[in-house]
Length: 384
Ligand code: ADP
Image 1 (cartoon, rainbow, N blue to C red):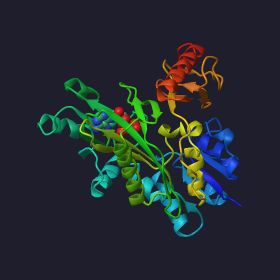
Image 2: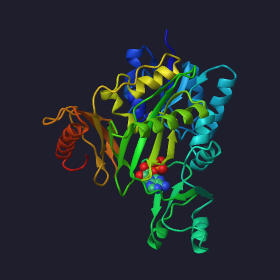
Image 3: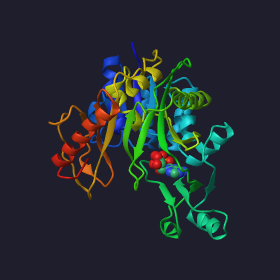
Image 4: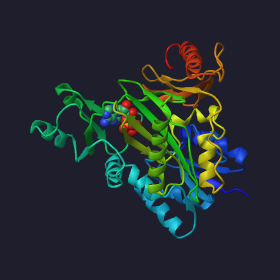
């Protein structure tokens, strides 16, 4: 009999983990603050609690065989508690909570990449915006540069590109790092699954497109149409990174491709990822089923892609407001629409996504375009 899996975090990633669990014979217990969170209705059981709620974490551990995560910003106290519980043999925690402690802070993540001689943009940590200002004023920090919050950033919140003096007016507050602005010709994601016994499965690299002002993911497409040697270098960096971490589960790497062919690691996520949503429709094993297989100690599934695919995020486009769901299938497109069940829209919030398949990436994109337009009109311009 397969283990019961506890999932910390109740967003859309948790929702699709829960959906993938049923067919695998896995029970899920989700720990999240509210019954209204996207994963809550899909979990077999709910433990109400925030990501730093130690009592909730205790209650979760008592109910499950394996604990995993759908988000990295879990409280330090909770991660330390989980590390003690797993050391005492009371529960398995996969991936290891120490990996989350390492990666949830962008400064410690970057320092680790440098130590491991994995390629990444040069960076400097700062205690606050004042430090950044001082470095600019003394001529030690040339523009353009990118300022990032050390913790808590997501979907482009916590990333600030400073191109000129005007950009200095809205520096991010609090502990941050500054890294070189990387001129890149593409952003690529690679998803790597690693099992308890070290078995690896690496998905085909996915090409990413970001919303230019907000830096939030807008589109993912696969195949990424990369030269074979480049695709294998992406896979190799992904595999090496997850092996060095000793990670178990699905991990996502975001990479910058520079004009000279160099690859730099932008970010490692110790979890399923937005760039992997198209695996639900386009791959033999979705990232969600794969993650559960890995953390439950099952053999990994095949990662073969069965059709070219384009995924679009459905982002909230207007001011705050109540959200209305749209049908899973829109009239003029074969794309499938996934709506996360979030009841309130906020600017640039991810409300859902859609995935279109086709004989070619171009054909899939045309379907995705048609479907996005339908969603925009069905939501009267609020979301698309
Ligand atoms: P988040 O944690 O919000 O995902 P990221 O570090 O992935 O933040 O940055 C979001 C986006 O901002 C990236 O995908 C990229 O488009 C842009 N970006 C981030 N760092 C750099 C950089 N050093 N140079 C150029 N663009 C960057």
